[in-house]
Image 1 (cartoon, rainbow, N blue to C red):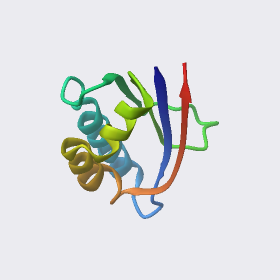
Image 2: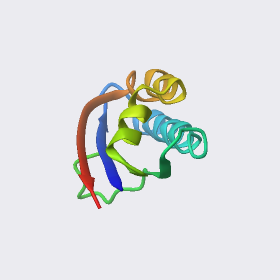
Image 3: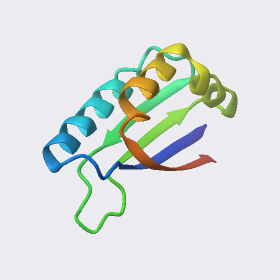
Image 4: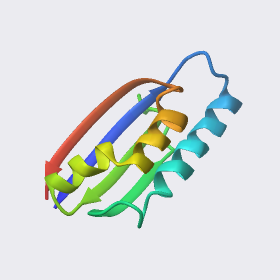
Length: 100
């Protein structure tokens, strides 16, 4: 199995209320992919980091294999969520993929 973890920071141009709405939209969009993408076993988005955090939200997902992760990255439903709910609002992205 493969873990796929991403940390994002949102763009500074958004105020606190906008950031909460954006984070909720990202969470809803990404978690809605459960059961729709072959090889995606689990997907969770954490939007409630502590004040000591340096990121605004985290994706924690599990895939059957590295090949399944590769398929997810180009799957039309994932691309639609990323293009509409994630990329327009995020300033930075850090990713760590690893085998478990």
